[in-house]
Length: 133
Image (cartoon, rainbow, N blue to C red):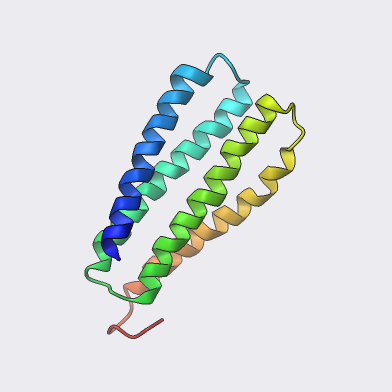
């Protein structure tokens, strides 16, 4: 399982670099400053959690608990929900003229996934054996 998190982390990081470059070179002139800030926030959090996935993959070799696996899964869910909803929000604000601003309402759920993932990763350090959690 740890290789899956390592692969996912590398892919997510590569996508973050591509999206960041796209924002810097392709979007800067085409969207509003507030929309660009939202897009950059999504890229930033995607990058942070790409590193979280890499860390989880490395640590899983030493902390082989179900809670460690759940941490990685929650990081992936957070990237999809938090970052994905922000990317969609910028897209809809730009293309659909604020018609779908409600998509931002699910962004905090992605934040909860991130927070829970970090807490689960922390809890995996306190496990004494390979007991299922």
